[in-house]
Image (tube, helix red, strand yellow):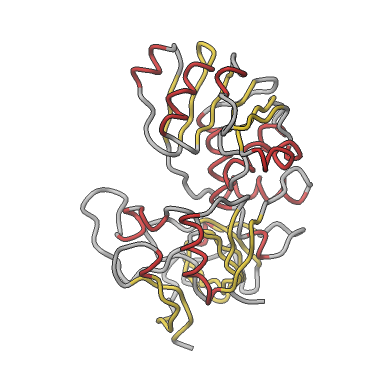
Length: 316
């Protein structure tokens, strides 16, 4: 079989550029495997990222159109390329595909074998596909960049979303006390994730209610980030996945500001899968839609509010 069904964009733009069509099936090269995709998760704004459209994360990358979006996948190894020793055909795997490569909104995708981990065994592929990008982002923010320690106080903005919902659970599991911001409609849901206190960001100002925070995780940016400096204790850290924090404000508040872009990491995926299987992490799905409806899912994602992740179901 040399073709497959996929969601593709033939020129830059938003969801309006996406088409469901027949595309060439990729072939694994050295160190890669071909994965029969069972489910793929989509991310708001990914069609605005430069990496989505070029072959380099640095400026000046070559255009890759037509591109296939969606970089979180769960599936089954269908074929091994040369020099792959630790995965077998039939293995159930999940992972995060580098943003400069074609994604998983397709029946098949090639991925470097060393970026894939065994799928959490207690959940199906639709649920597993909701994990890689969001959970890796939350883990790298809290553990790698903030150095979160037990008994610290964490403020998680956007706690009902994909990254935020994992961050609340992870911080709680790591022994921290969590304050979160969300809509009023999501407050009970966020408390159930483990937050000790939830602030309704539409009707309350978190800086009037919170102080002495060790770590702020900001997935919102803008005014929310600027206002967050005032709640940090001296020596605290603000971690943003939206934009580089203002270092002048960081110095003014005797705090640290960090911006990062999530990276694939097999070891961390294995740790996260263990937390899912042990019940310490519960992936949150907003909804699951067929691959053929991928364009509509991206269109709605650009405008609506979501609790957790939106997943494309590719195959049973």
